[in-house]
Length: 130
Image (cartoon, rainbow, N blue to C red; front, side):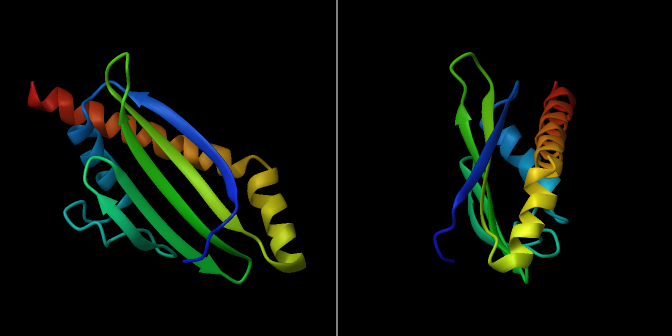
């Protein structure tokens, strides 16, 4: 996929190790967490680098997009999960779509909710192991 313009990054620190957080990313983003290819409708798996990077891409008439989850050890403990969005919005309808999705704050809410679900998944899995 072509190089896309950077849109934003949202991050959360999850009080769980990277392996548990990685499994939480897959449980949140895949219909079958044992198969990273089972990403949401409208997306295609670009990369699934265990415990490090999960990237999905997609396109429709109003945009071309990439969503990347990056996992890193947090110096204070736990795992930092960053969600980066890269996207292009071609043409007049693309500009309108960008205003509706990005400009309205809706994208920020959706990505924030994804990160919170990942954190909840990781925490529940960690608690179940104890």
